Image 1 (cartoon, rainbow, N blue to C red):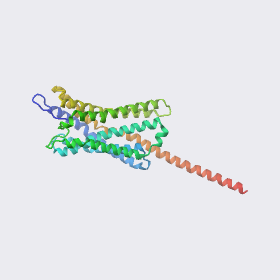
Image 2: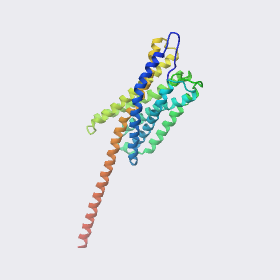
Image 3: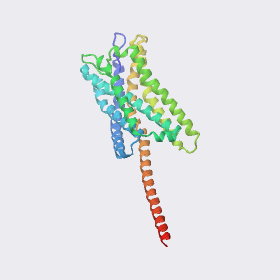
Image 4: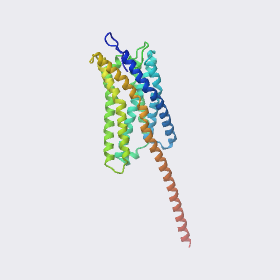
Length: 317
């Protein structure tokens, strides 16, 4: 997501070559691990399809978004190094950015849902119908794709290197400010608030496993590590495009930082496995609990039938 800015005194060739080596070094393991982990996660959720809840619907949506990102990585690497037609470039860029914001908002939904369940256990458990989660996920997916329309509208028609030659309209202040506020800062505020409140509640109730606190902290750290640098890089690059930042060395540093931070953001498709792991444990626990309850109910019904039989025998006597 960067405009190449070559001039007589400021050349970006060395910066782009270094960034490409970093991208190759991180993207190949990300592709392999992301593909394996997400296919396994999808298989796990399909196995527990009969025990679906709001959280599981969010997880499946997150898996699909991550798979979309994984399959876009080879195309990203190729199109960022070779010029491709403008329209094709739009179809390569759009899934990449759509996945980022789908992941952000679904992770926030999971965090909010967990906060509600822990703060109001009875109300939270009563509202675990997956129907609303399906509606929310559909809205998130639709909104993310609608917001990607500028990528198609403002894309240059001539062959370009994707993620390098975004149009001036894409770097306009209103557009970037909207992306920063609605796509990152508001979700970040909700994430921090809900996570902090959930941790406070758990620490003040000894009945909860302390491992849950560690999971929440890890999820928040993953969110910050994956999405904060890239949004900071986008903001700085916007300042470059608006000629607020003009120093050559600074522009080169921002260029490298943005490209590398975008690569680190790809790691979310692997780190989301933290969500999948604990969700799978929860599904397994529910399935086991369901079997225990069913067995206990059968035993209790048998005891009641035996008592009824004895009562009838006594009355006959």
